[in-house]
Image (tube, rainbow, N blue to C red; front, side):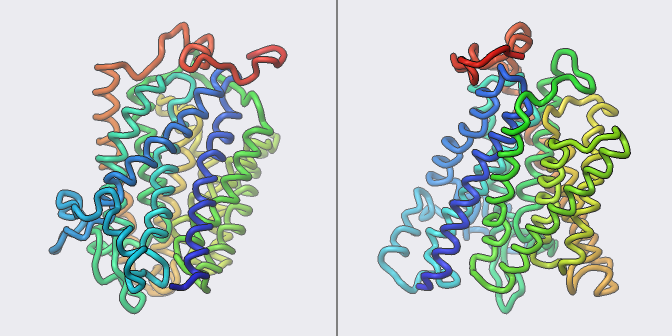
Length: 426
């Protein structure tokens, strides 16, 4: 066992887990003061529920080896490897067979690393329904969506075999289509962004929905969350190499520089449109850059990484206004940042990816593959989330009562206040 690589994977997993509390801070600072607890609990609830489901059957679905044939991934989802349920096989390998390693680390280290990816993906969706969702309904949605949408998509994208640096077997998006997605532009960000759009449509608009409907009640909280997200993202991207090597190093550097450039891109658009560069814009721009660089962090030279970040920050700054033009209420811009940023980063590979993009290869095939993969995940996640959300809304109800939404939902849903001893509440 390579203890260095094992430590690298486990530390990376811990960093990615920290991203979900960071997301809770990031989202929590942007909602009303009387909805902070509710907003943050949607993230913490995801940790509790998805963490349990992953151990019971999530890993078995996402990394089943039962699927064979030309369309792997679909077969793998329906043919769950029974030995993977409750991770029994992985425990036996890790504790009894030193040869049962992947790249020198125990399989259980990889299981833990992928678990936190599932958690953060589910939590990301919650920003689209801030200020108006029932906690119980959210937990039901999170469990069903993770089971029917995230786990299968993870199988399509993350479940593959590499031989001499080439994918020789695996889920259909990465193996059959040949999509390059190093750390989850499709499986995480497009997946969550499409689901967020669906839920925003199901729950409808907040009362008084318009530009400036609510101002962030706690800007420092949001900036703290953005900082924790950025810190954890080094584990997200560099950790996806599963080894402390040169690929992890370029992924790490791009995870630093692309979000920095994206922050500038967002602030430039803000200055042009509104005359002021805001701290919320800086935080949002950095997150947009992190989203966009995720699938491409290993395959872009640093100069192209900077360009990706700059363009992604500007694009997402413009995209957040789509909800006003199209009439859906994506409370905290999950669509504008994660869906748009995820699509842009995924397609960028097809043009600028080292050795496979149009610029270096002269071949448009990779761009087509990237577009097909992004589109497939978008459609599958959107339709699935729309159906699941609609059923929940029509049965147990997904949205809180109007009077509770207007007053703020913390005390009604959780019996708590974020600032019980503070001054004026808004």
